[in-house]
Amino acid sequence: MVSGAYVPPEELAILAVAQRTAMLTSFVLMAVNLVVAPKFAGLYKQGKSEQLQRIALKATKLMVLFALPIVGFMLIFPEWLMWLFGEQYKSGANLLRILALGQFVNVMTGSVGYLLSMSGHERDLRNVVFISGPMAIILALVLTPLYGVTGAAVATAIALASQNLLAVGMVKRRLGFNTLAVWRKPS
Image 1: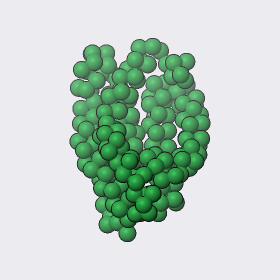
Image 2: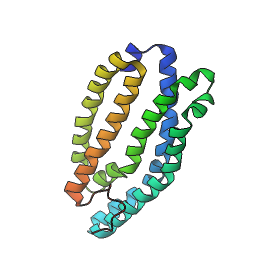
Image 3: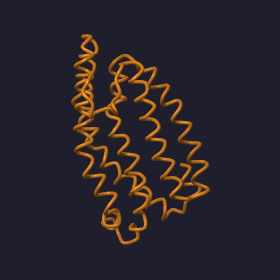
């Protein structure tokens, strides 16, 4: 909504296309979440915290491995990807790069939202949203008027990354492990 007030419609269309294209990065996250969310709930209920940690870290590692080529392609060939939507969309290459990086942080953090909600820590997830939501609005209100459509993309990427990084902190606090530490052996 903020972008609509400060950005010309042509640039807003380019931002929308870049945002939807960048979301392909997190498609693997959505697919994996459908499988692991019920497992998180069952393992937590059974008190099997080591298995819960192992599955969460393995799922995160898998998601990063699948998303890395997609993000790499978006970072190296954004003009070509945006060109697929029309010649005028090529100008959104940097928007795609910015938004793809935000989505990659989303993938790198793993299924933190589901880990919190499926383990009885919905309030922590709500609190993360209560912090990151207003921050997203403030960032958009500050960056969009200053930097236009690029500011809107940066605000979106920072807000998404911040929400997930805050949730990583809550998972560490409540469940005792860091979903960003996928390459370390589980404790």
